Length: 492
Image 1 (cartoon, one colour):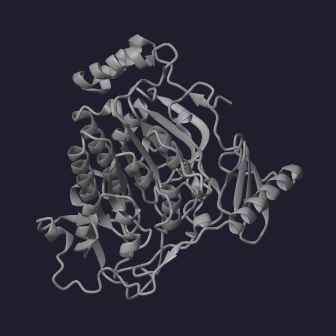
Image 2: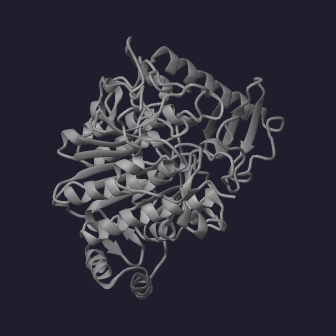
Image 3: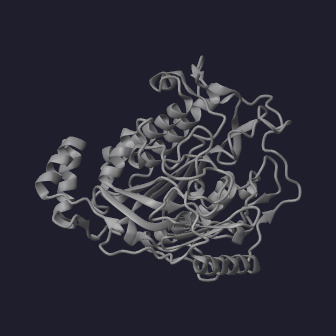
């Protein structure tokens, strides 16, 4: 199987495509870079000398399914900005989260480690909880900050809501967002007596998310904050982390966005996310930073109700089928990533830390186990590049080696799939290939024992309490933003 496919475009075709997809100034700049760094025959962008460390924008969507965007086959949702991002960059078709659910997935992303290795296992954090990401852990943010990066987080955090665990304690210079999931508010569908949902700037609660109007504003607010951060730090290397609360339930959208989506709130939120991506990319272009900026887009786990996993089986929750942990992923860096590239090689969110460390000119810590690997060769579509992962683990309930995938069901039964022939995991081959079952089960058991034997501790505080116990004197988000009569909807 052809593992990495680079868009085979001759120079004339490249010129025509560029004129169609870019404004004249941006395309001429890209073409100029192309003369030095893009081989128009092979379509491979070689590494060029840089005068500054690359800027990094990491966009992390909540509960987006593999088939929810155009580059991954969606016909329902209109995602022109992500379509263009993929056309100008690379689509990673075998990219995985390393833990599911909000808290462990974000823990793995930040530390390059399987979540259970750092004590942030499958449980999610709740308001006023005692547990949080241990400040002793080395995060991708801390590594970049040590290399002179300005660092900002804008969106949903969910690694502990006590000051000891909030973004500023993990290496961020700036933070604007909500400390946990947007459903953790007084109207939670199952849990009563939830406190108000705080909106935080740095470590201070400045507003609260009180109703559907406030919920509908979250994507726009986070995007605007990220754009402001990029503009303010345009003259120095920056790391902008944009973990959206969209498209996690409860789902609300501005009425104008609902109307564009024919009353479909899931579609409205996905298309709002797409416009957010477009605004980020447009800002990078307008500031003349395309040559120096990597934008990475992915999701925290498989999709939840109303979303699409495309050809994959499963979704958020349940057994570790592909729809549970394989996520839609696109990377963009004109002049470094060849246009219209596709990689079928395995990568994962734990790989982001070591990959960004290399790009920033630093190294991962050697005093602890880091599970992730550098996948920069895959990102840049280097000819012949292979995944650094011989084996990929789906927490403790699955393992993949090459095309073979073993799923361990909650009842202990084992299923075997050939993902090259059966991406939808419909044909269990465990009876036909017992030797593969035995070998993969051995690897999974060994991995489970190794992680559990070398688990590092999460951090805990004794006197934990919610950030916002009373809304008296605390404005709603809309009021804080100076908005009135916000028109919103949760769809038909």
